[in-house]
Length: 600
Ligand code: ADP
Ligand code: MG
Image (cartoon, rainbow, N blue to C red; front, top):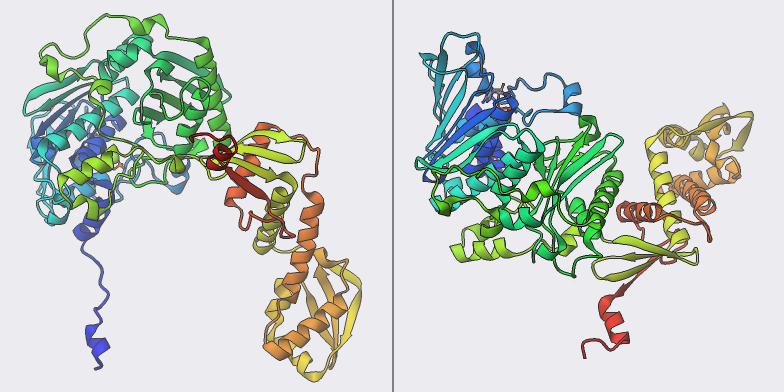
């Protein structure tokens, strides 16, 4: 046995709970992630009341009790299994998800890293049932248990068996404040349930169900604080298949960071840099550079128009018609801003929202205390940073999202110049785009992709083209049959050294096929490969692109220009046209500042 053999470890199937722990790495980062998953499960179970009890910032104990529809006795064990869910049943369902959950992973992940006691009762059952699960162990048998209709999940000793993850956790009070933030975020996105949150049995937050505009505004006030609520502008807009509502901060109440921008898509809190940017654009006439508005926006959209299966904690969604949505958001905000300040319902000083039992210091005012959970950041901070002392973390947290992360590289179109150039604003300054050159490149690359994907359109020749080949070349026809087939040539020997070409790619019908193929055969004889056919295609597609590309004096709308910019960003080699001319130039603010002797 060689050394390398003795070093090789055998492949083996991982035990289920190890696989679950790996999955938990993505979903369960800290106590707040557990709370989020449990609340979402309760909401999916149509609960109207949730009671959340936390001990030691959730490190010791998290309990969520709901009055939802519960879990049937025979499904309790299954609920803890990975990929076991009641929310979808086939791959079709993934296309129109209306629940928070669908991955069937949360309970399996949580129970692989914590002790879980799950007690539940459905309305058909006479009493509840309980199962207890410990990491790496087979869950206990079900025990009958007194319980009202609904579910209680108690999660304790989180990460006791995963010290690596435990090291990333902060103090109990920091972890609790993250839980607090998550709870606020979820209750802002879902008004139809009431909730209590307790830390060490002390009531921290209490919200009644809020089903009408007035009570919704009150919940918003309770969560976001008077500072925001007093001046916020309420917004409501509709377009085909889209509804947007919420509150947007008055320009006078701007912030130095984009840390209070909350977007809910079908009740799910998501982050989306381009929505942030749409907001920024909407405010650009009314806000100073470097200031950010606070906004809370709710978008309702047909679930088939979004893909929620793009992020492990479902913190992002993908829109099928993203440009349309960003434009809709920007325009709705612009319209609301041009209307001026707030609707009267927001300024109501009615019903106190936070339970009077809570001490004044625990009154929730997110704006005042500054939410520490910034949804614009990747949730997993670089481990080397995390293992540094506390100080580093606060630095990381204080860093505002980089503008470069928010703005698309080529920015957004401002205007068209003499029908030739597009002017766009990006993070560094002004961009000038040669419309024709850019469009030509986009078309060309697209044509190449289309050709590579689809079966090529071919054309049968009435009169076959015949080529006389030497015996070596004749032999190559067989060896390279696949090459000819791929490009849409059908050829066969009509006589030993004569080749009859009966089908050719339609795209090359104007090209002299005989000489082309002769050249290909010479290439193949000399170097065993030939890219001549590709080159011919490329030349043809390039001239096709040039002829089809937008020519000067073609008027473009801003939306069309932006579409072109976005296409450029995702197109290879888009910095040059097919003839090698540059397609765009950047003028930086520094350069312009120099012209105008600014800052000297
Ligand atoms: P998912 O939410 O993706 O389906 P989970 O692991 O979070 O996966 O939950 C698994 C299943 O357990 C859910 O599909 C649901 O049927 C059930 N379940 C979990 N929590 C609750 C709850 N609070 N009330 C009712 N059913 C629940
Ligand atoms: Mg779930």
